[in-house]
Length: 457
Ligand SMILES: *Cc1c(COP(=O)(O)O)cnc(C)c1O
Ligand SMILES: [Zn+2]
Image 1 (tube, rainbow, N blue to C red):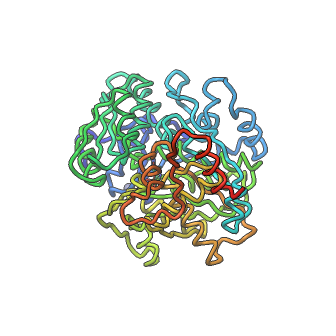
Image 2: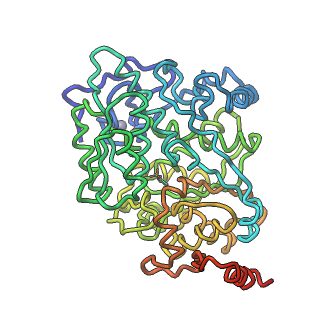
Image 3: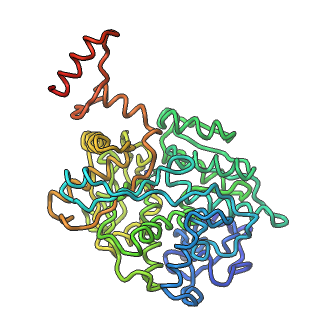
């Protein structure tokens, strides 16, 4: 696919010297972050944002830690954002006035004491990335991408007029919100009828141009790539590695929250494989700079209905598997042809990681079980928790291991899933932990009887 031959981006033209796009396959091609380029024109591989290490070594590990500690949750623009609090490691040369931020990141990492002891991993932590502006971790990547677009559009003769993405629901919510905040038009491609009501209404409310197509995510992805070929519409999918730069801050933030200690395992639900690649990239950078001295094992959790990465893993990553993804409650990971495959393979291999999958029954019960300990988990987090359970059972994750589950979205985006589970109306699923409300007459007697029956008092 040589979409940029006519007006090819100039190699290293306006590249900030130390941070630039480079070809992930290693052919040596580099581009400015402000070039409209998503893949290597030479070998069609993904690009990555590369930060040269030497300039970053001007601060030592201790100095970086103190700097980031000191900025966390402050109100000094733009450092109150978990992403821009690490701006030197993200996109250092963005001008303050072009940063499009709603103070994303700095999400809570909490000890899941009861759930952890039930599952046999008492040192279990949940990183609640869904406690964010649009209710998913996608905000972390979008603040970076939309900021770069704003800086591009501020340049003379910029071809970019709008941003666009295909989405399984959360990417579009984040893009629509950040684009609206910046005043940039957004075009959203959704698979009709395959996203939750909350996910559909977010870009609608934010004034995006919402196009619901009669296809699945992979079908939308194909069309958005064609529509964005002429460079006037900028592609915001995670193939665009600017998103990865923002998302990589999650791993760094987890370490900061643990006083710069590295957990043993991080379990994360995966679809297009951008987020696990981002997690890995953040840890890689910290390791190279001596901020940490080891990597956590990264566990990629897939829904069995959409498990191409699991299948590739089973075959020793001999080749990339692509499938037609089947319907899953975890709709944000219903992806059959994951874009960031090569990056995710490196993430699993270099960290001694694992790929595992979970059925619809397993993910629904795992989510419900977690909710009974005070959470309100989205189905994707259910996938991660079900996978965690499996790895603990087979002894791969040990009792003493410090384990973090990345909760990727807020459960309130998925109330249909919750309601159907507790009403026991989910197709082909037994609602093991259903807790439906009791409908009673307005009588003290009836109420007392019901309470006595339930509490056995
Ligand atoms: C996007 C998304 C994922 C998967 O992330 P990938 O980068 O596509 O692997 C998981 N959970 C939720 C809630 C998401 O929105
Ligand atoms: Zn290349």
